[in-house]
Image 1 (cartoon, helix red, strand yellow):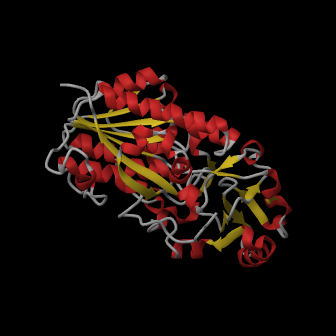
Image 2 (tube, rainbow, N blue to C red):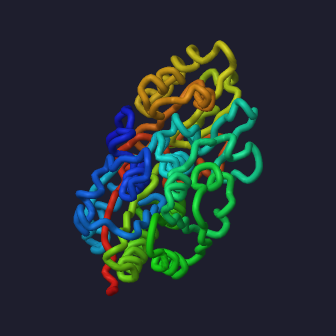
Length: 379
């Protein structure tokens, strides 16, 4: 399992570039087709669609899908290729980059859990209900808001429970929201969207991968359910409707033998807070202890993790260009697990105990699909 510590190609080949490229089809100011969707569109570059739906399948990594490609003929027949997701390769950060069209350093949602210094809180975006205020935490307009302001209809499709969550309000706001809690409801919502931009979110494959692993029969069955849903959508929409399928991250299986306790690392008494998740940790350290702790942890972890201080992580561009207002949200130390290592912690014992994981920089976590198809329904 290869891993390389390099910045994703923000601006030219990541999940953050999907919605801006779609928005450029309607000439929304400020957006460009950096992904060349016009050339990838199976309907032809000169045949602009009336409607575009971006379907994000949580956890649909490019590499595990390739291993089962022959079992998914509809997905395999779609045009396109692969992209890279954000660092961390995790849902809150990736969805924030999708929704805003910006890298993590520009929107400030830098992990599954991170410190928000201006509010003196530790934010867990997936369980975000009250403070800090979503618009204060992420004030930049979303792509949905900008598309809607340009006069293009916008529809967001997802579980009813997500409609007013803190993460939705922070990074996915704009347009109408269609609460859709079943596969039939998702197909109906997409099928009824005849013009403008739609976005739909599918969470189930990720949940299955976390519990059973991406090498499991359960994950394969989950992938087949995605294949069936995409087939139904294509059969429901017509050739003036473009479907774009992508994902927020892939996943790796991390067996119990690969687990390393953060609390057991030398000098842990100098740590103030452990955040992030088991594949990428933000570590907030007592003043004056960062350099010593970095050196001792790099030695203790060896080839099991990359150990960086904040300045190193930002200097490498891992989070993209960093708004100075958000720099303090990054850990004093950033630990990125290598191979199948899992950096478990007492702060999240349930998550630390899961088999399937993501957040770091292996190809299995970082590579995601970008697949396009026109609908096949008659007019």
